[in-house]
Each structure stands twice: as structure tokens, then as C-alpha cells.
Image (cartoon, rainbow, N blue to C red; front, side, top):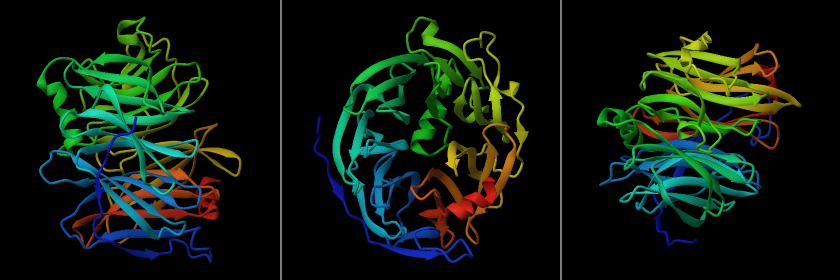
Length: 403
């Protein structure tokens, strides 16, 4: 279904850049770009980045909107050297873009909601970053997170009317293939962290979702008054369709990231009252979590260098045909840190710090076609204006801390 949409152009970006490598490399292999804007009262928050077939990059972000409690949808296209090509501010009818930006068969997808009804919508983008379709998702509200699962989409949303977290499998045409609801519990106190997450007046909560190789799905979200990691078969055969659960404590401790590595093994991280712990390899019997263990069951490696309750991105990437678990987060000194671990042993392989002079914060990262890495974040221009930054690491730089 194609809906009408409206967008406006804001001021052209002025791009500044410097190399992040002392080696002589092509400009497309290694760079740092900071995207400034002469509309001084504008603020931008980065969400995700994907490489396009022409070697350039699509950036999904949010921008502050007047007369709304939510942030609007902002899209940027840059070339293979990170140089600005185009931008698009979607109509303020659409707000709160959710992580992630997904590439499915060469078309890019993301989710956002309408400002008045809070209904979730699925957006499709072409290679140049222009919106081709906007498909409403009936009965889905407040999109929290989405993840590609082959040619389908795992979508986590929140229904504030029924007070349910919803996990659904959605086709790229917006059809609901399967889903289940999970009660968050009654009371305004339970809902408040979710509301302040969407208005960005409170802490950004670590919503995520994925699939286990035994056919189960998992998500990190609110269930029964607590931010928990839930494993489900989406059948509803068990209570709310829950097969297993790693329970946090309200929104004060829980998992901050998790990916499935295979055969019941996960890599992730957790937070607890401000402290952060890295879990480069843990075994979870997801079908036998009947005693409802807490996330503190997995002690992990403490990482005091990170900011309190740090946002963490973890992905398994391939470097020279080797599987590497790569973490990204924010340090207390204002840098982005990348931590590489062996997928097989959980051993720390190396560490890389990004950013200098200004404070930098991570949004996302992804592998590139040339074997390198692109890292999206934000920084403060002149110490006050929130702007996007884009790091590109060459394959040699990636090898330097992952071998």
C-alpha cells in the first residue's frame, strides 16, 4: 500500500573531514566525516547506517520537531568517500524512527509511527535514499525495534492501550505473518520508561530482537513489570507464548545487547545499577529457563571504562573469513570504543578507540563491501550542536585489532 508523504529540505550540509589512519589509503577506505548544518537550532540523532550498491551510505536518523513530543524522521545519502549527496526530512506526520535500517534484497526498510495515532508504519527506501512506499501496520503501535530475518522482518512494538509488548514477523509488504503479545503489567510507573524512551526525555532503553537457530525468537523488552529478555515460539501455547526468560529488575538492570552465535551460544552485555558487563560467549538453554534466572546469573567481564548503563551494539562480523564478535559502546572519556572477541573462544582480540577533541557517541556499525567497517555516531560541533559523524575503517585497520 502506498501512502502520500511530504518532505522538506533543510539547509545544505557543510562537510569536514580528516583521515583516521596514518597510512596512505584511498579516501573511500578510511575517513572521518562530521556533517555540520547552518541551521543552528537544529538537532540530529543518528540511528543506523547501511552501504548502498554504489558504494555510498544511507543514514537513518531523527531530528527535533517543533510542536511534537517526538523526534521526526531524517534521511541522508553520502557517497563512498562520505561526502554529502542529499537529505530528506519526512513530513512531521511521521516520528520516532526505530532501530534498525534493514537491507532486504537491495531495498532498505525501517519503521516509524504517525504522530497523532502512534500507529507503526513500514517505510521502503530506494538506493538513493528516497522513500518509495509507506505501509501502515494495523494494530501495531510505538515501534521499538526491527531486525531483518532473511526476507521477513522481526518487529517489536508497544500497544499502550492494552499495555502489551508485541513481537511480530512481518513481510516487506506489511503483512503480519505471526505474532504474540506480552503484558508489561498495570500501572503508570511501568509505562513511564517506555514513554520517556520515545520522547527522548529519559534513558534510551536497549530494545532488541533476533532469532535462535532452533526456530525460537527472542526480544529484549518489558514483560511483567520488568525489562527482560524473552524467548518465544510465537505460538501462544505457553503463557503469553513465553518459552524462556532472563529477568532483569524493573529498568535498573538487564541485558543491554545480545546476539545468537549458534547452538545455544550467545554474545551480549548487561547493565546493573550503572555498571556494565561484557559477555563475549555464554551458553543459554533457552527452553529450560523455567526457574526464571536473573540477568545477573551471567556475571560477565566488568567494564568500568564505559558510561553508566552504556548503550552497547554487538554484531558478529567476518574478517578475512574469520568470525569475530564486535562490540561498540561509549567511554567516559567521550570516545567510541570497539572491542573484538573471538567467536569461538570468547578471548579479547583487540580494542580500537574512535574520536578525539570533541565527545563522540556510538549509534551503529556495519561491515562494508571492501571488508572494512563503517561506524555511525554523533558529536557536538562547537560543543553544543548535535551532529552526525561517520567513521570508515579500512580492512587493514580492522585487521589491526581483530587478529
